Length: 640
Image (cartoon, rainbow, N blue to C red; front, side, top):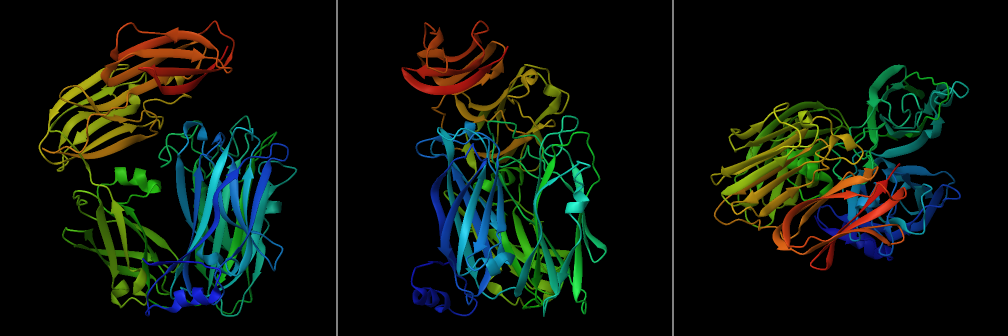
């Protein structure tokens, strides 16, 4: 897709926009923040970064608007430590009200080092009336952690995909905005979330309700509002149009692992996630001068409630769709190089795309052609019931073709409802993806279980689904090494580790669960692939075997330390492909060494008990020097 920057010169912008043939699409980029250093203000609990920006003018034909948000470790500080609520707001210069564009829940960043970054994306297309001309964009960072040694480098940009507008956006009205007490009988939430009246704008045919809602606070009895699952209902003109639980499973978060309790499910959010907005589109009954929207929360009461639900909700009135039959492909989820889709790419064997209906007629059928460059194109006939404004995830049949080097995948949509598509420029999309790893024909699969092996299952299958290794739930013993030497044909294999508790082979909070590991070695016992033990609900690894392996023995030693929250005793495990001289130190916060371990002989592998029960409670740093060079540093917390 061609792109065009947003320059200072308006004539240049218009030339860029309209210098293409009919049905061409450009992407206009507006950079708002570029690695802006963001830290907390502990005295106020909130810090704002404001920028006045010039966005495309109202005359620009805009089809979609995407917001990208990147968090990175700053150059001079550590990454932020806590999971705080951040927001991106927009305020038109001619108005006084702000509108929430995006909601970010920061990661537990203590795990990340300098050079780390991650990008999230969100669709903000229906907010076009406030995302044009001159506006003020505001990044809001909440929190109370120290601001002299940690923070975030934040980048924010908007992408305007030009083309035939889907439907005119006639107006935006705020319905609810604030952090509302939940469970406090003196502040009943139904009083705050009273029904709202919307006056119908001329030409309005659709009402889109856009919400961002997260639960916070911690009631001692039940963990509300962060750790309790409550339902929410949306009613329009007396008819319930949505009823769902505000709850999010977090152990499959693509951003993993993190330093804190990242695996714990929460009230519709997870640490390290830009929450996707809830976008509900309903038709408006013709002839009605006004409409009533009511958001209701599940009844809840607590003796001493600290629970809140943080909600922003907007009513967006849309005019008639510009076309009756207009399908679009909005994203290739699998195969894809996008880090935010990494977990999905690991767990799905076939292609997966996201489609949307931009036509006024309900989308009932669609032809999808897809395939990888150099491979055969396949055809899938999709059938469903997708009303205007709705999206659907489509799993396409068949394996993904892998060639050497970077691969290219393409998907194309044809014949929505058997008709010609009204806007074909967004009917096709490409993605790049890496080839499968190629391992030698003989590999050694090693699984060392933790103290809770009943939560785990391990399975290796070939391309036909035949099990080559199968260790089902309940079949393994605690703290046991299972090793399988496998002679595999040149084909694709699927390795899957399952954890039913969602805390992987190791999780710092679950000290009683112990730690384990999963590795692939070559026939000489050298490490080829080490898998992250702190892996939530498990992992999937697809690989091929062949005469020309692309995975060489790993030169980086594998070092783990568990537990990291202890009353004095912990254990450091070390594994490498070459023997080296090791020096292990334990130091206090002021870098004073309190314990040293110096093995006499060079080692490839070893397990080293560490006991500092006699030291004062606090944080300590365990470091490993390999041939005089530091290769590992990790904190432990000594508790009494």
